[in-house]
Amino acid sequence: MNNGKMNSKPKSNQASVGAVQCENTTLNLLKVNDFVAKAIRERLPDVLVVNVCSSPGSGKTTLMQETGKRLAGHLNMAVLVGDPETERDAIRMRNVGINALQIVTGGMCHIEAQMIYQALDHIDLTGVDLLFIENVGNLVCPAAFDLGEDVRVTLLATTEGDDKPKKYPRMFLTSELMVISKADLLPYVPFTVENVTQDAREVNPDIEVLTISSTTGEGLDAWCAWLLARVEQKKGVLVA
Amino acid sequence: MHEISLVRNIFRTLEGEFPADINRVRGIYLKAGLLSNVQPILMQNAFVAVLEDEPRYQQTTLYVEVLPILIHCDDCNKTTEVQQYRFICSCGKPSRNVVQGEELLIHKVEFTDE
Image (cartoon, chains in turn purple, cyan):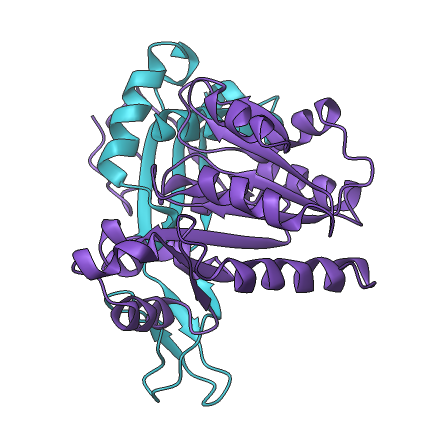
């Protein structure tokens, strides 16, 4: 077994080693992912790509459904949705008329850029202004994988507790927007928007914060306005 | 599961970089920033597990060094280590200019001459 002997060289614990030659190098283990992410950005110059991350059950798919209803007639949106198994989420979205394609990760805890690049060949993006990537529910691993998105949005449900930004710092560090979901449950859970905002901004001073409820509709106008502004910024034209 | 794929990634990266010398690799030195969520003990266990499938690395040792998170403040031009995930410079100004802590790099490879 290895005991992490960082500075012991040359090594002598293996079969007789003669002279040991060292090669100092800088090999990024996520090089392939980052290369493909760049290719995705080049392939979608006119589509705003939003990577939506959260824990399982925070309301990503429901928010996609509500967003689709509200933005219909204003812009064309599509969704690539990742889950370890089943096509349930894509079916839920297609049921409300959203152009959605399921990415089954086969047990994997995150989506990698290569999966998005391949999925782009199987979804019709003609006329699409806004492409959501609904990531696998997980606040850890997806944070490390650039999917070629323009913006990263992290949902945090009030039922999850307001201590999450400090527990999963990289997710919130790499997000442009934190959406506090299930705001209709605020009276019943120990969660304050002030605390979570303060913690999130200690991790990422630039993070924007929106509070929504897909059930009551609270905050959804502000959410849609935020998206429209980003789409217009990317395309350089007014959309709505 | 994630560690297993990272270990495979290490091997594929080295095979791409040193195709002629791959059977002489004896030491792999990894630098993992604290934000990469890589746990050294889990990486070591995954490394041992992957060796079952990839016996050519049986004589290779993996070394994992975890690097703290450093932020640079443009106001006071100082680099500060982030404690408790508070991304705030010692001068009090928030900063998300992470100069160290997100990396996942092979920074040194040792080869035997045999």
